[in-house]
Length: 393
Image 1 (cartoon, rainbow, N blue to C red):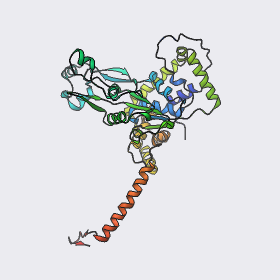
Image 2 (tube, rainbow, N blue to C red):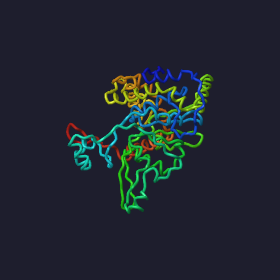
Image 3 (tube, helix red, strand yellow):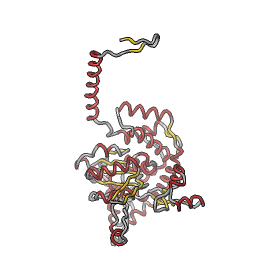
Image 4 (cartoon, rainbow, N blue to C red):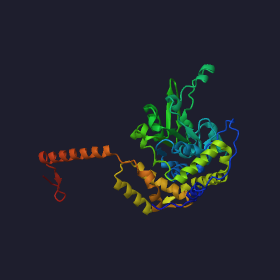
């Protein structure tokens, strides 16, 4: 498969191949700084890096699922995205009013204060970087969807619902480590919110509806259990993450991890320039994305690929084409070609075929044929004669 050439891809290759030679002196580890391992400090794993960047550029790819054994850098890679987050518009209103609400539903679609601000030409939103929201395995349903605010109820005698993790994830990234171990009730809540982009919480006489338009990223170790098909289908990009096979790459990974443990701030600073450059590239690609279109050749090639693979879910084409558009945007192009489709296809169509469904439909087809045969035998079909208006048997 030809290597896709783009500024983001070239930056990944350039930094990944760089050897970490700087001597790092021990730092003060007593501070509670949020020091994530730098994304560009990860050795190898080009496909994983590409998929995560495509999800940052275009949320419409439908999220990312990382499948692989322990210790292959899945969780580290996702958490390291924090330094590359693009900016999004967030509402200044406590009710979440947005200009797009007015564009679709008029002034009645927002609160009176926001309608007044809109009429006066005042902004309804502010720019804020995308955030990484992690869903812990021990989270309860109320933590995820929201529950009654006990402080308001006890102190102020008011029934008020506090926002859950799903509402906090709106226009952000929701990351679930060990996603295959989530309780079914939480999986169902996430599926419902992801499908509609919003959800409603009812607690007694109080109710609240929240937006939940998030990019879902999950990681899992298949040794610990399978993932329910319903939630697997919600991940657009699927990756099989294996360990590094090249001894030199494994040694380089050790050197970088040792430098990080010795003095995390100094190690992160050594990648600061490249990190700033990549963040700008991600933002530029995201801004360009609305102008990117697919060539007819790319559309036909993608459709034929999905047809030959006998994939039923329409999300296959959606993810395939949206990922191709994101890859073109990353290369500062306004047209996604068949080569872009080829480059992202393995990420989008793997793990989509179901042997169970194939066998189920095959059995059902046999039954349909038997029904048709018996009907032809017992009740011959009536064909209309368009020439004289009579029917024939």
